[in-house]
Image (cartoon, rainbow, N blue to C red; front, side, top):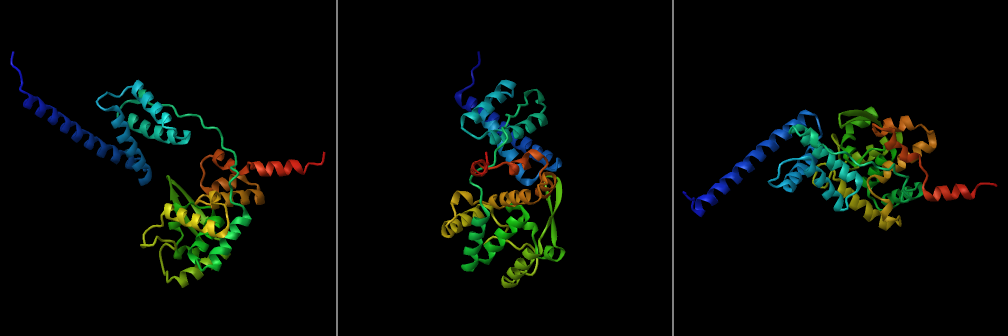
Length: 294
């Protein structure tokens, strides 16, 4: 019986490995094109591709099967990730399973209990304290940034839509996840933004940019807000980019009590997402109970 020498065996294995890597690179590229054809955002495509790589690493040489996908989901839960995170990555893996013809291996997402209103919500007084500190210390950029977030309810990633041109119209349009909505700018905010643009020599384009003139970064904003909170005497756990969106929503609900309208303003597809702003914090519940005349 003829035997292959070890060198031949090694070369054969290396060649097979290289072919497999080429096949996966090709499949990854084709899958990426498929995701863009579905009109997913660049950020979503990036998340899906990262999860594909992780799923492939988990599989190794093993073929795709229901047993393997269930084991992969279990491995994510064992890492202590939040249910919402596991669900996000599960949806990403499911997308690839359907694309690759393995629909029978699709995973179910975990049921998420409706969130209650958190207790570490930025109050109106704390918000005004932050504004006062930034104003007194000449930080006009973050004064206007916080005002814009709090008066419109937009996300950090949506700030790029707030441009010099939008000040003339009193509104701007946001296209996110195949949804379009209009954001209205209150007159008092427009005055502040016009003053900031004039002071900063911003004649056109986005009003809020990073230090290098690129798109403003969520992490950079978060770090600056934490720094400002510490100096303004506001609890740091209450200050993050989403705090102002939350403050806007709670204030809107207390003023108008219109959940449907708020969902439309915030760009929520489901009322369940918006409903969190109708819940009371533990402190509010305690205060209301103490006021009962029984």
